[in-house]
Image (tube, rainbow, N blue to C red):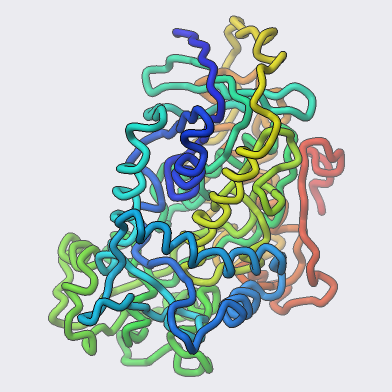
Length: 520
């Protein structure tokens, strides 16, 4: 196993919109290295929906703010939400000035679509449902000649001394170990959808960034809030990918094989918040009904939604029949590593941005198409904080760091397939005390109380996946109510006792140690 030491100015872990925005804004002021498992594995590239921002004169940042707070069930950080909705449009205009092409009408005006829980049409798209794909191509063109990109590498440990982060430990697909030192480290690793059997996420998005930060000493919060997207293309017990909410924004509606429009009872009908629609679909499927999106009213479907059209072709679905079978799947984590408005965590020189971070903008349930907006706005925030910080100096920790050469014995950990199965069974759309407790106790039979230095390098990623799972289950057990994306069958209503109560977890908290309080 080869051991390599490198020294960089800023290291960014991830490859999606958040990572690329930080990198673009830091260059040329800082020497930037971007580390990613795979340049094609980002969730940004999968984003069919667009980016939410005020487009029409009848709309305003205040209305976008109010829609975001409402969708988040009041659990949002209001200052962070205001920052999000006020700053997005100028940054989007900067993209346009650099050549990014959003969809426009025949008069050349920006086309804006409508999605669930938005009171106005304010979703910008590029190439119909290819926004994410086009966006990543645009971002990489800006970056490829200006920064160092290390791909096919997994970050398995953050290097810390006390409350300061000074580097990362990497493992390549060829099992080569390396270490990169930096003045500042930025986590932009995405969420945790890959921990579920059915997900819209790339399967490599496994929540490791949360455990990396947790082991480094950062505070984690709100991990019980995982959003399930209502409409994944579902055929023959297999998911073929996401069916964008924009389809319902164009008039499509949910119906069953019994011709029952399942969202008819809700005042917002098919454009209700995602958590609500996901539960309606789950209930219908549990009662034995198949659920479909009726798209028969969309006359230009294949040109408007080329990605979805291709997915339907792959699944053998005939679009001329006007029905696409759907089911919910894990989609987005609202919680994560706690940060301030500049992305700073509770560990010095460690930042987090995007889905791995918890700025508080999403509350208990993310408003549709606010995720790309978050990556853009808070990517700027993080970059500006680093540019104007005084951390760009040689680190004493680098000078004295040495690589451990001991070979550790393998530890007892679950398989990824078992994690996914149990996450889907016990941490899905519906939860209860009995199932969550059973899952927590199952997790605690493994070697989770262990120093990272004692874990074999080839098992560190699996440990991070397991720890993140444990943190999520623990949070879900503690929140004895239903709010937003967290729904407990045994506590089916929101309890005012939990208003603005955030379940925070740190490695230092004795009450959070694995094995303590198993019956809580």
